[in-house]
Length: 137
Image (cartoon, rainbow, N blue to C red; front, side):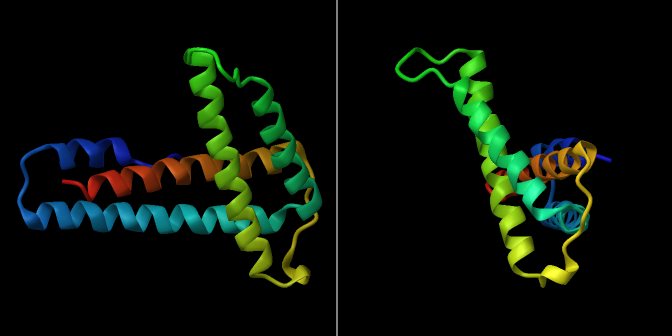
C-alpha cells in the first residue's frame, strides 16, 4: 500500500514541460492527502496511551544505537533516520489526537495497530520529503 513516488521521481527527473510537472505534482499531492487520511484513521483507532508509549519507547531505543563522537557508519545513519521517523510520527500523532475529542480516540492496543501507525507515518514522511525535493525542479 506504499506510495508510488518512484514513478513520479522518474518523471520529474526527465525533461518535461510545465503541464506534465504540474500533473505529477497534483498526483503526488493526492497520494499524500490519501496517505494522511489513512494515517489519521489508524491513529484514531489506537489507544492513545499505548500508541504514545510505543512511539516513545521506540524513540528511546533508537537513541541507544547512536554513537556520539564517533565517525558515522551505516548503523549510525540508520539510527538517525529512525529517530527522525519516530519524531515525525510523535508529532503527527499529537496533532491528530489533540484535534479530536477524546470520545473519537480508539481502544485498539495490539502491537500490529501501533506498528501500522509508525509504518504509515514513515511512508508519509518520505512522501513529503519527495514532494519537497520535487519543487526544486
